[in-house]
Length: 199
Image 1: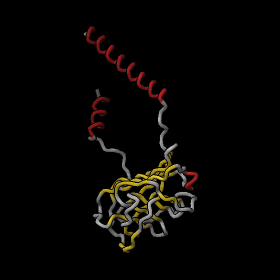
Image 2 (image 1 turned 120 degrees about the horizontal axis):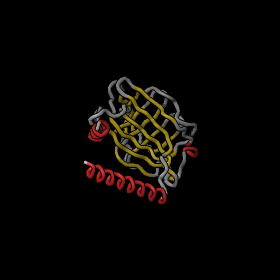
Image 3 (image 1 turned 90 degrees about the vertical axis):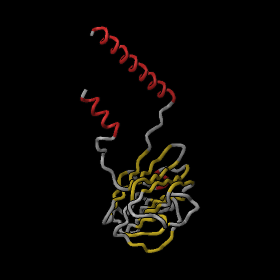
């Protein structure tokens, strides 16, 4: 009974989830697809300086920790400086342009002062959600190193997490999982019928 209550509370969102950075950049490698950067969360610009520079590159680079995401055709990003953290997220020195992108304009570029780019109409503390994909690429070809990299400003934190995507199950594995769920359901129904008869 206690386990069911705890499960119900977690499902309903009543128990707190594990803490995460205000803005998370997940970079994953997926076979036959490429490398995907996904940006989610909120961003507080308090204490950062708007230096008015416009930048439109979307893509990835290991050295100088460069991540640009969002629609490829919209170069309306402005720089705000002040994040501190690791200077690199890999060994790659070449800029690798994204082949596709979506969502909000976003840029993170660690050039010793940690610049971040946002849309011109961005309101501090608002949510950001964007993606960029470098097709037919791998971490090795881009010079990215797996790991978690944390960058902090006076008011916020950006975490860059580079990790392989979990493998997609093969059709045979799906069949085994579905069969297992069916057997577990049958066992639960049988147990309920037996307990009703005994009661």
